[in-house]
Image (cartoon, rainbow, N blue to C red; front, side, top):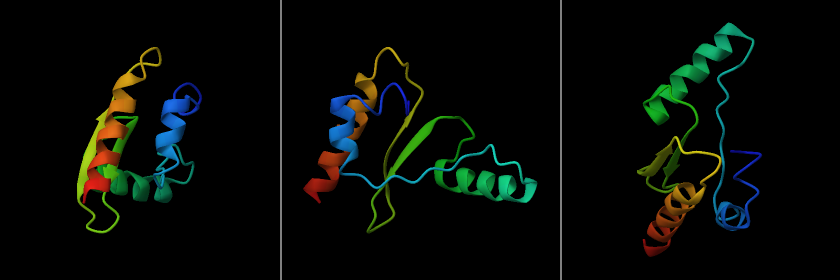
Length: 91
């Protein structure tokens, strides 16, 4: 996603309006990896990767999530980002 979808103009334009936080589960330190796994479970509720969760920064309410998709078709991801962005702007 970072290489093939995030650079697309449609995604890049929407992404500029978001604050991104990443949790990488491949840490070498076991204690750190366990802490990250706990955060992933709390925030995403799923160990699946990649999973994108949009959260309202004010209320911490989950606004949407995107899981899966293919590199060839990024339109579902653009749709996810568009819907969440419009929802936030309407609040």
